[in-house]
Structure formats: C-alpha cells, structure tokens
Image (cartoon, one colour):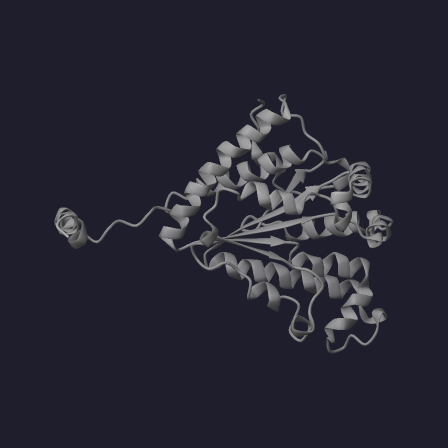
Amino acid sequence: MKDINTSIFKVDSTIELNVLPTKIKLETDTKEVEKELRRVRKKLGKLQDTLYAHGKYAVLICIQGMDTAGKDSMIREVFKDFNSRGVVVHSFKVPTPLELGHDYLWRHYIALPARGKFGVFNRTHYENVLVTRVHPGYIMGENIPGINSVEDITENFWEERFDQIKNFEDHIAKNGTIIFKFFLHLSKEEQKNRLIRRLEKEEKHWKFSPGDLKERKLWDQYQFCYQEAINKTSKPHAPWYTIPADDKATARYLVAKILYDTLKIYKDIQEPDLDDEVKAKINMYIQQLNEE
C-alpha cells in the first residue's frame, strides 16, 4: 500500500477546490485500506485512553461536507475502537428555538469536549457561513440587532463572522483544545451516484429527501462558500484538511491517519504516574486484597 504523507491534505496556503482531487489512489484494494484503518484506529483508541488519563487536552474534530459526503459513516468507522466515555458526537441540525435565543456560537460552546475527551462535530459552527450564506434568509431567524432584512446582510457581515469564528477557535486552542477540521471533498458526479443508490435501495430510502435535489442545484454556490471559509479560517492552531471523499474507505483511513500522526507528536500526553507514597505501597495493597 502506498505510503501517504498526510501533510499534503493540510491547508496552509490558498486553495481552489475545483483543482483539488476528490479521489486518491493508494495502490491497493479496499480490503487492504480497511485493514490499515483498523490498525490505525486501534492506535487512536489507545491514545484516547492516555489523553483521558492525562486530562489536560481536549480534541475537537469538525467534519463538514456536501450531502452524501460520508460524514456519518466516517464517524462510525474512525471512532469504533474508542472508549465510549472518552468521545462525544454532536450532530448539529436546524437550530431550535432555544438555540436561536442565543448567539449562533452558543450551541457549539456548550458542546465542546471536556479536557481528556474527544468531541466530534458532525456539521459544525461553519454552517453559519455556509448554508446561511447560500440561504441568507435563514439569518432572519437569529433576530440580530441591525439586521432587519436580507438586504442588511452585506459582505462585511460575513467577514465579521469569519473573524468571530477565528476568535472562537483561537480561544479554545489557547485553553487546551486540539482542533482538526475536515472537509470531505466529494465530486458532483459521485454525489449523484450516491443519491441514486439511496433511491434504488429500499433500506436507504430514509436517507433521501427531495430537498437534497434542490440543494444539489446550488452546488457551485456551496463550493464557493466552502472555499472561502477554508481559505479564511485555516490556521496553524485550527487547520483545515481537504479529504478526497469519492472513495469512502480511503477517506476514513486518511482522517484516522491524520489524527494519529498529529496527536502522537504531543509527547507531553502521558499517563500520570502514581503518587510516590502509593507506588511504594503497591505490594502491601496487593497483599491486603489477597488476604481478604
């Protein structure tokens, strides 16, 4: 299997999505890719246990992508070997009335992982500069002072949102959250194939909505908004990774490998030593238990 330097997927300069690959060949078959994924995710699972015991860092994993990009199955397969107490997944859908009663970042702040835990955002705070930018009428539901009509939503409004998001990520990074942001880069042709499979297979009908076809017609607008968001907000402490997503097995492996390759660099993430006094009495404690 081809060895991949995962840094090639990290966005550290301006990108153009239409020239980035949506598929990458690893010079092997799907079974081998899945085998490598299982190997890497076991290492991730052990690392998660150490992170939990260490208790000083949190890890936030943000997953974005067009409909059918494979976000749900990505989460299921990459984190399968995690201890359930150490990872929490949040799927952000249309804001509730309670959430709309607060600023748009509030529901993301309260869902952040605690130190020692992984948090996965399935769709993220970036929806507020993606779907709302394609459908600016949604902003009216936020009841923001000074925004009385769609005409009040200027380019400056979006620039301010990008700044707010960057400040949000800067703040949590400086307080111990390691941030990963993954864009599952799907081709329009592959999305069509996946939508057709949802319609042809009865067990997948529940995943389909006629609204998916309406949103598909806005493909170019979404690609523009994704490109803008990625270029404006990919920072060393909160980098974006563009993951070729036409092949699900490869995409899952790449995300798992990026996570592991990055986190293993944190040499200070170690299981804490026992207190010296307790350590000195280990044999005594064992004897007490054996004599019960």
